[in-house]
Length: 492
Ligand code: SAH
Image 1 (cartoon, helix red, strand yellow):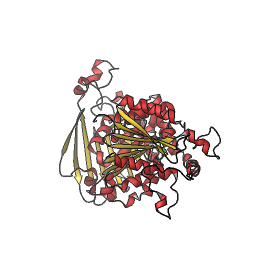
Image 2 (spheres, protein in one colour):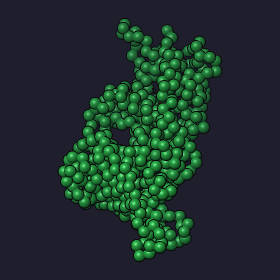
Image 3 (spheres, protein in one colour):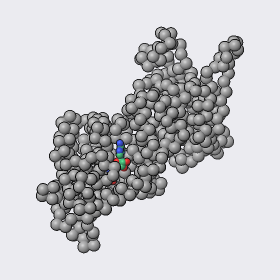
Image 4 (cartoon, helix red, strand yellow):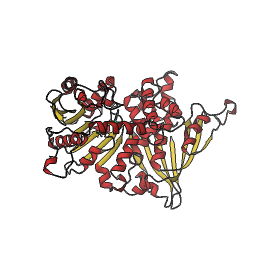
């Protein structure tokens, strides 16, 4: 299968920098289903074209049981369209061969990464389930001029009718990374099939590569259904998250609810014990009382520093309040903030003035869009993780998934989790009895409930756990925030 990518941006050879593939060389890549080659049929100042040629080894696929399921009989496994039709194989090749461009990284041309460029794509043979109409419904709302043509199935036998495959060309002014993401997601959607098993992590991929365009796409439901191979539970999950972003409704009410929670938690009562890690305000006469939120972050920071971690992931980072503290600590050479809400991440990036960062700073601090309910390889390899005031936003039945993702898959040596202590709520006269502190909280736990969950998680995954209070401690009710610190027993 063949994909060509042309730009008329000047100098057009910048395409080579963005793709990180030198225009003067033919480069070859081994994939687990065949081979990919990248070469440039033309590379001038005013026009440059890169070609990605992917060869699928159908016999290898049969051997590895990755080929078609054989619905059409045994021969179908050997004689099929997979070697030449644009399909999920091409998506995988795009991700493997143009991975850095797809993730929006360019060492040589960082200023071009998000800039719309005049780009044109041709795809030699695209199976469009549903016909040309579907092709247009998918690409035209994204701003592409679409051309599609079909030849006869076999020129010697015109009576056999048209080929089911389209030759497609797409043209738009888009950032290259965006175009690659569109192709990555929409090619298998057109084909309405995938060569591999579709599981939870596919939802994360869809959300990640759909970032910034899929939530508002008029065909988002069709895209999610086909991309996730019509697996209903996955599709429902993906649509839930996409709708949150696309409908634009939650943002304002969310802010109002957040403000209400902050106000509720703001007066720290006099005569309290200072939690660890929080500078004593008495030592600075001008210092005001730290809010509970500040105390919480200070405590988490102290624990993370004390753990000796050199890399840390803030899971459910929200607007990046903890990230801002982490960044100031030289101890942390690698930092990631992850959140399911794209909009929140954008706010975090703005608050941190990410646009003014150097390449090195960007490489040190990653902002990741993803869900804590789905296994995500990007979360592996961190020494520590913080999950601050997040678990109470997850539906209780999904905690098992959260546990698998964080403790089963990511497995950092230290995990710090904070959550409200429900017992403490009675001390807030403005909070009606039985109500939670925030509209979006799905539960708030007593100390006993948190401890029993934490102990079970630690036991199941080989961690030790201890608990610390955050905020003023009431002798019978405990502190407003409770914190669990998990430490992995065995080296990873
Ligand atoms: N840790 C931050 C934000 C807490 S609010 C702070 O202390 O300021 C809870 C955050 O969890 C929100 O930003 C919300 O978008 C995020 N969140 C909720 N469900 C999530 C999920 N499944 N995966 C990742 N983040 C999630």
